[in-house]
Image 1 (cartoon, rainbow, N blue to C red):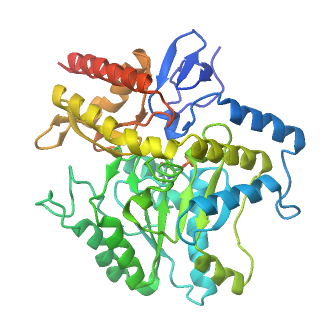
Image 2 (cartoon, rainbow, N blue to C red):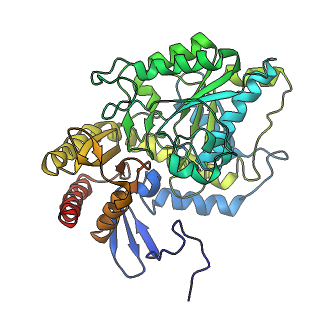
Length: 439
Ligand SMILES: Cc1ncc(COP(=O)(O)O)c(C=O)c1O
């Protein structure tokens, strides 16, 4: 019988997932897959974690929904306290939403309202980067430098300025990179001056670029420079940590690697960890103070914002993450993953570059490593590679941006060493199979 459920590729038939446990999932045919990128970099505690399942049941027996204008609720209050305690500096005001896109939209709206309440309503523009993804809603998509995801919606999207991605493998800011001279960071300075600082509300960045190119990490000093630029121009810095936050990159926030405190942070994915839709915006006190002293009302929110069931799960996810030392584990496993992926690069000419931080790594596939010449896009190599991996029992997440081919390697933070070894073996086998197919 034909399916009524719309899939990403409408006519594609997909295996049906049946169950998951730890780092593995099984389909209804009984095939087992190693979840090599935690779904869409989400399932940081693995599948079926007993502590989270207990929380789901316990909280469901108490209350699963209340309207946030009528009641606050204890799980949401405690989750906000916990997020504030884990985040650096005064990033301690929290707004809860349901998806990464909503978190980015909310951060954007808080930034605009902040300036409007200060009597600067003309500060409206947001500067982002080419080669970025911030979400699927029209505001978040307007910030996204992802040609494929934008294509059908151009015209309705805001035409915000964008600067090059800080990509040392294919630098668009400086022909002699590497070494990086941070001209990619200085591009923000130029873009703000071109737009006029009095019209720029914020800059938005993914601390490690995720879905658009595959775990692209900026050079040391980039984010410190960006912070200085934002401060000089009185522009808010929004870190989109939807993919990188909650320990994925080896700190609670990836921005902590560079001792950089953003003004607003969007989080998602690993916060609900695949158990509930949950995302959050963290704001510095000063950002919210302008609104509190002005109209006093935050003009944003959703029916399910601060949902008690989702919040209770988020709290348990954070508790387990901290209790089991998973942020430190991500920091320690990072270099090991990097070295092992580096070995794959040595033995597979199709791998052009590997890069990443903590337990978020990207693997770029190319026609020629030295020049970085991409494979012809019409050959859909990323899609082909992921299909080969899946046939071999390994799930990876795509990070192709319509120009280059890339995939993300981001297993659950509690993946065992043995499972990591299996992951590398499956990657090796799959790359060999792909190369044989292309030859
Ligand atoms: C950095 C980043 N921001 C925002 C989003 C959008 O999140 P969601 O798909 O939960 O709306 C994503 C999703 O991949 C992301 O990677």
